[in-house]
Image (cartoon, rainbow, N blue to C red):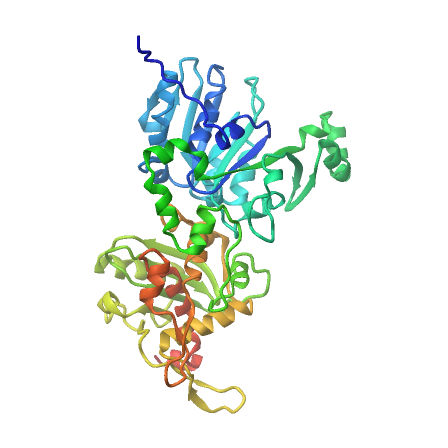
Length: 501
C-alpha cells in the first residue's frame, strides 16, 4: 500500500551541515543554488512544537518576499506539511502548537525601531548583504527568548566583496584566492562587538581574556557570565552541486550560471569573494569601494542634480542629488512617462532648493523630451565634442584629447574617484536599486563595465561602447554610472559662466 506520508528533510552536505550547526549565528552560502533559502525555512521547523516559539525571516523589501520562487512561495513547499496555516495578509504561518513564523521587511534603517520591545527566538536574514550592519546588529538585540529555546540567528548570502559581511566572515575566506577555506567550513569562532570594533577568539575563554577590560565591569554589575556577552559565529559554504533536487528538477539552471561573464560566474558558481580587477577599468576597484566609507574631506559646496532619463524598457530613470561631490540622495523609477520625468526632477529640485541651472540631464534619446520644460537646466549630450578647459600651467584654453563629452566626463570622474574626492552617503548606498540589489551593490556591479577602449586613429581617448557595456551587464545600461559621471559636467565650465546662464 502506497504511503501518503511526505518526508521533509535536509539534503546531505550543505543543508545537513547548516541544520546541525550549534552556532549562535550561522551565515550560509557563497554560491547560488545550494538550497540556502529552503535551509533557512527548514531551520524554523525545529522548534514549532513549542507553543511559545516565534521567529521572523527578513528580506529587504516586501516584494522580495512575495517574488515568484521567493520566501513566501517556498514556504508553501514546507509549512503545510507541518499542518501550519498561512495568514496571507500578515505573511505569517501559525502552527498547531501555537508557534508562529513571520516574514517581514527592513527596507530602511528606521524600520528596525518597529521591533523595539520584541523578543524573537529565531531570526533569519535572506540575502544578508542587502542589509546594513546596523540593521543586523540592532536585530540581534531583539534576539532573545523566554520560551526555553536558546536564541539564534541564521542568514544566507551570495558573495559580495564590498559588503560588511565579507569583513565579518573574512577568517573563513582565503584572502588571496577569495575562495572559502575548506578546513574552516562550519568551524565556530567567538566574538564580541564593542562599538565598531570586533574582538575575536577561538574559544569563549579566549575572547573573555582579550575583552576583560570591557566585560569585567558589565559582569560585576549584572552578575552574568562572560559567555552571556560572547557570540559564536560560523560560515558554511554551499554550492549547487550539493542540491541534487534542484539539478534534477531544473538542470538548465547550472547552464545559466555557466553562461555568465567570468566575474559573475566566479561569484555565483565558485563562491569567490574577490573581484577580478582589470587594468582597463576607468574606476579603480578599491578606490571606488572607498567612496562608500570615505573619511577624507570631500568638497560639499553647492547643490547639483544629475539625471539619466529613461521611460520604458529595462533602463531606470535615475535622479541624483549632490552636495559638492557627495551623493546625498537618489530617486529611481522603473517605468515613467514624460510628465513623471519632469515632475520628479522638479520635485527633487524644489525639495533640495536646487536652481535649474544646476540641473544636468541626459538629452540623448528620450531625454530630448525635457528640453524646454525645465527652463535653464543643462542638456548633456554624450556624443558632443569634449569641452574646452583651461590648462592650469599655461592658462591656455584647449580641448582635451577625448573622443566625446561622455568619455571626458567618465575619465575625469574616474580620476577624481581614484583621488578619493567623491563620497556616496550611507542613505544612498542602502537604498534598493531593484528587488535584487542595493544601490551600493548595483554601483559596484556597473563599475566593472566602464572600461577604456582603444584610442581612435586621431589618438583620442575612448571608453567601451555602450553595446559592449550592456553585454557585460546582461543587456542593461549602466544607469547609475551614467548619472554619476555627469556630475563632472559642472566642473568643465568656469563657475562664473553658470551665474550668467
